[in-house]
Image (cartoon, rainbow over all chains, first blue to last red; front, side):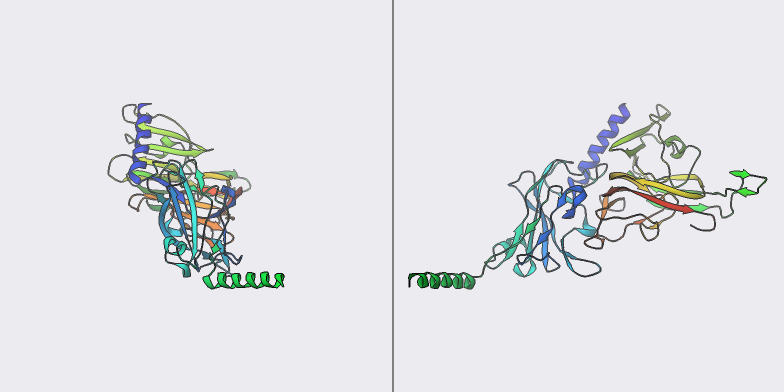
Length: 185
Length: 213
């Protein structure tokens, strides 16, 4: 019994030494309730011209970037966009600030590579194409050893928003104005 | 984890004579596998059939060593205590299964598995969700293309890498949309186990014969 307690303590120590909560960053795994496929503003699946990044935190309003942004993947055989992004060989990702195996909130943020090199640049780009998924609560994360990294369960599909260009707004305003004038006549 | 295996090339025909009159033999191969365990956790398999495949039969009695076998969503744990002079729990670790082995201290420990590979068809049940698995025969290689693992959309293979600093998991996810593994096809060493997250239940079958498998 004593030895079991010691080993349980070792497990906790090992986990805290190894880091903190671990997740398996892939946005598509229906069996584990991960349904975070990303489509673009034009309705197509996101492909390799798009970036995706995991954001996570202890609360829903304290999310920070976890790891680098990864390019969305195309199908290995057909080359077609898939709307899927993963950390690939860098999985699992450790979420800073989350205690050993603790709960976390996660979100997928995605953007067109042409819109900016990172989320801040893309989301502040007046002509940017970007989007963020729902914020999914994870009841627990992996501890790095005996508890494997968890999936991003609860992640839902995301459609990127394309911020209309100013000229588009101007054309839209002109069109509406012309329509109004026509109706008056 | 490093592994060295040696199998007796000559068929060991003494065991399993079905009928001496008909001259039908069950021919098994015997040998040993050396598995080097690092301090801390190691996710390993028992690559050879022993008499009973019990923890006490497989592992050396080192004070503070622990074996953690994941079964049905929980761990079976056996600890060796020098004061007790024995393991505090008894369970089996058969080929095809896997377990964490916790090595105390700061020195590597070499475990020598001695046993046989029984001839014939073998099947390994892969349930939906989490399980610890390994190859049923002592063969290393790529999980699907060499070891015949029945991969399906959504499968996740989590190997434990003691070469990383700190040690931790390597993950590869198979997604039909991608048409591939996202981190490459997992490659297993002889005696290496892995955590499997299976999207759909399956059976991993192999057929071992002395002339080839």
